[in-house]
Image 1 (cartoon, rainbow, N blue to C red):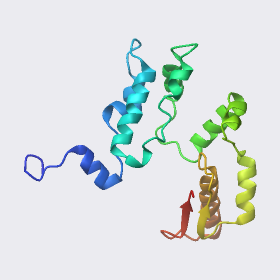
Image 2 (image 1 turned 45 degrees about the horizontal axis):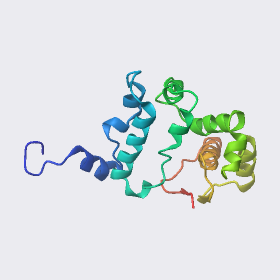
Image 3 (image 1 turned 90 degrees about the vertical axis):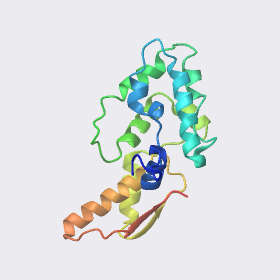
Length: 179
């Protein structure tokens, strides 16, 4: 409908089709490719503010000021963090971000994370919990979902069980609820 009076802006189409719109300056590749002289922590804060504009449910939730703390001792930390994640393949699957979160929490911020009320359950413990509850159908409820590891492990459990039995997962058979 481009060029007609029924033409819609890209953000309206994205929200209608996907439920979410990410402005260009809030996208990872944009932030990753900022010139060295740009203030990356300020760009991250602006990106989060823009995200909140298009997704009101996130207003006041995103950690907009956390990146300023990182730059107290070294202004390059935010851009280095962005570069560290740049080699993650686009087609990565499973609980990759949960593993990254766990790595950082266990190696760098365990005391800080727990002091702020954040805890990390090791994958082996989550896998054991999933094996015990055997989530073949119904809803998996995880009120403190963190990185979503329980959901990923449950989906993996169901997928492996379906492959072993030759049965297919029916749409909507297993739901997720993060409380």
